Image (tube, rainbow, N blue to C red; front, side, top):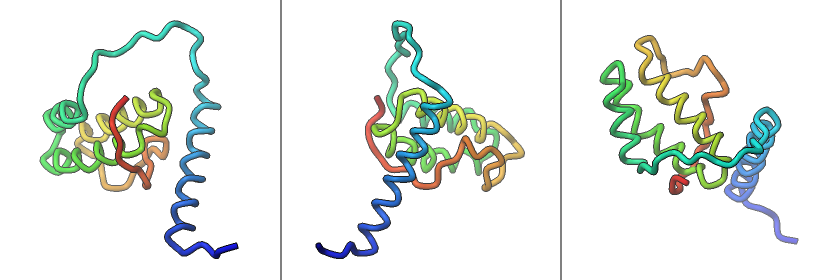
Length: 119
């Protein structure tokens, strides 16, 4: 059996961490047994533009692109409601004039997000 290199070990660790985040989320927020009401479709670019517009400060507006990109990267791997929660956390953070670089709400922070299309 071939030994894993550090990059492979890191990737496996990230996947395990993501899987555990999803499991905890689904445990806290089980799927609803009602017919889905769909939101109107919008693009990641439109989301980024609106969040930038809503930002309380120029520094917050400057963070939007990175935050949306990070959320977009992992969206395909997460339940839609979990992605929605992350978007709401971004909105809350950028609209807060007192927001700092370190999150006060750990549920709104995921340090290892990856890119992908919005569902």
